[in-house]
Image (cartoon, rainbow, N blue to C red; front, side):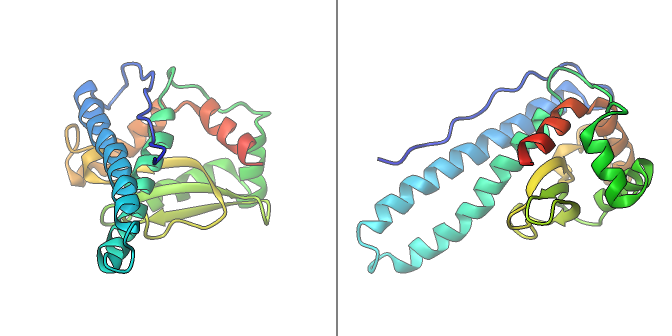
Length: 198
């Protein structure tokens, strides 16, 4: 029997610039990713019982698995960033020091990351840690599974699909949403992702 994924619950306080309604709708979409991931895993098992006869269906649903799974996991990082309220990144933070080593200046990196988040179209701005090279890497990921870096662990994940902000902002106001995201960010959570990845 297939072991299924469980929907995570997040302790998200009232946010500045991101409404409770937006979070509620967004969490519903996350719930769908969990459900679809589990449905696909169950179907893969079913189709695999006669893999030759179901080769086409099996191949197509296996492709869909990456989209649903990565959508589920990216959202788990994203929502965890808001848990327990915003916190600042401390001066002695190992993540801050690593960012400064990589880009020379924290604000320079932050501006670069925000610029990546403004990429036209839907997607994710993600800061990764690559344990192979011990480097931080910025990336733009299109549809969850298109552009994910293999090997590096996500440290900071910003959802730039329109469903993340359309309740509160128009597409022309994406910059305001990005600022609201960082205003509400729990940097302690991001720091912990970095420490876990190392």
